Image (tube, rainbow, N blue to C red; front, top):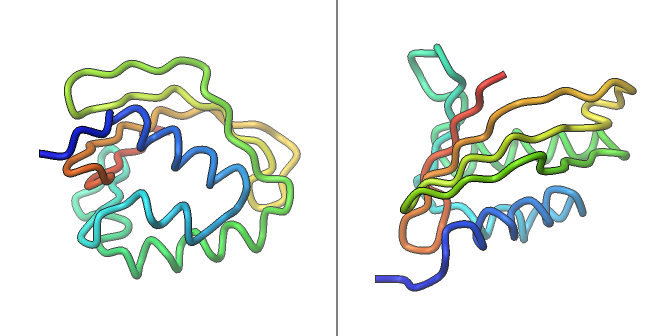
Length: 115
């Protein structure tokens, strides 16, 4: 059993996201991680390679990208962040979303977005 706290894995991922540090960002995910959008049948990204492509494109198109946590709740291996995102795809407007992280073995195994 890995003793790293799930919230710490999520916090490292958030810091790497804000720095647009793709290698550090990806290091927080398991090799078989998946990203799901609420209501979708299939994951929007179903491997670390797909996650890398998705975020490489996002980071390149979003020089002012930043996420801030409005609130965070942890329940066992699940971390729920209410986040405000700025500068996505070069936009000026902020958006709010829920990000629900499942952390297993010290890595994010699933990420669910509620937009």
